[in-house]
Amino acid sequence: MNEENGKLIVPFTDLKYRYFLYRERFHKALDQVLEHGQFIFGPEVAEFESVLSNYLVSPHAVAVANGTDALILALKSHHIGDGDEVITTPMSYLASTSAIALSGATPVFADVGKDLNLDPEAAARAISERTRAILVVHLAGNPARMESFIELAKKYNLLLIEDCAQAIGATLDGKYVGIFGDVAALSLHPLKNLGTLGDAGVILTADEDRVAWLHQARNHGHSSRDQCKFW
Image (cartoon, rainbow, N blue to C red; front, side, top):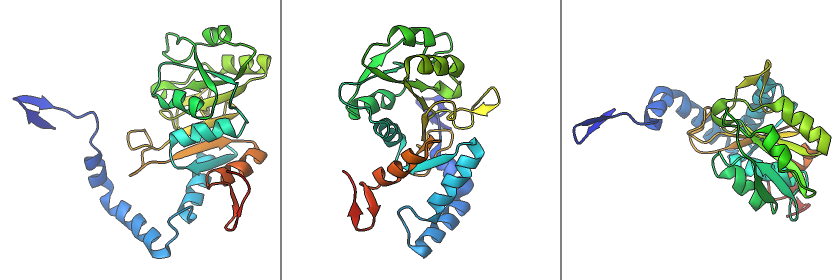
């Protein structure tokens, strides 16, 4: 807290204080990475993916640079792009929409319900012959009505994507969000509920074939150190 013009200012968040609390552990972990020298996709990343997938009861967790990349790669891994429409909520951080546009598809807004999440009935009315997916956001850790979205996705053969950027650890009917849809995206931005010192993201999926593609896509299409399968 600090004072400004005679008023007591309480910041929304204090990242420096969080750093102060865990400073010793942060530096110990950093020293470990500096010692082995694997700064990209090192053993700590693989360990984190394993721990997170076990915690969320998701078959696979694929770490990427940030939550936006997680959304873009989730869309591209299912071949969603030019000419396709993706229904989503207008009430979210802009990345939920920009990821759709950056994948080449067209974002289509449907209204929110009383829970401030995407409304299943409104989403149903927005479906067209070009609709390929529904991107649901669990706003502020409050789970959306996934049972209704699962039924809707099955009825119209649509991909169901969960944006869990603000909802890591949130549960619905005893299950963690992120495992209800076909694929999910998490954000580890410093301001999220599981924030890093920099930025990162994670893709959750149960699809073995998608995982193989995602592991290459997150690293420029490399299938090995000297081979690139795609851009």
